[in-house]
Image 1 (cartoon, rainbow, N blue to C red):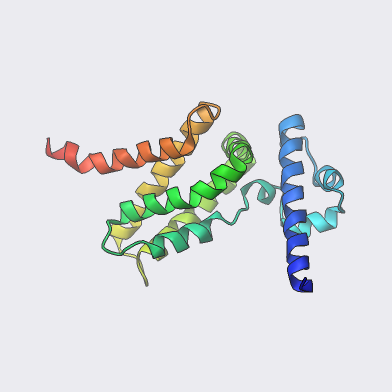
Image 2: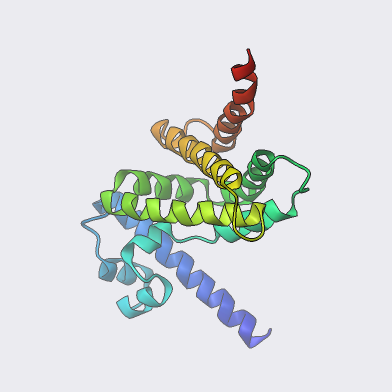
Length: 194
């Protein structure tokens, strides 16, 4: 076993444990009532260790590695596809592994992000950054207005699907809601012509 691999696995396990304990405590006690010290203690680490993994309490809910995966998936799609199709396919592909492995944790995280005022403010900042990543994945250099609009519309479809999923308390399947939301985008030009 290579020492570097072991360290990376240990770091990943600590990060996951911190996030799992934070989500558990947020559900049990509420986001505002839960302290970083309580999260760290539940995960068996010091509060200083918490801050090595998450700069703020908000980050333990909002921080993930999804965006780079989505960008890579968008770039891997054929450039001949319409940008909305590329983003939809990338979201479906990226979500498949995450959803299968962490469906309940994802539901808790999205519910917290949408229902907690401090997290909603940060979520808006994160969405702006995600839109810029989508733009960059679709087009190299300074994005044109068309690319920016398409990235924004796709992000709105994704966000709306997430909101519907939380509103239904996870009863519907998120991939189906995402397909439905992107389906509305695909229908829009046809409806206008009717």
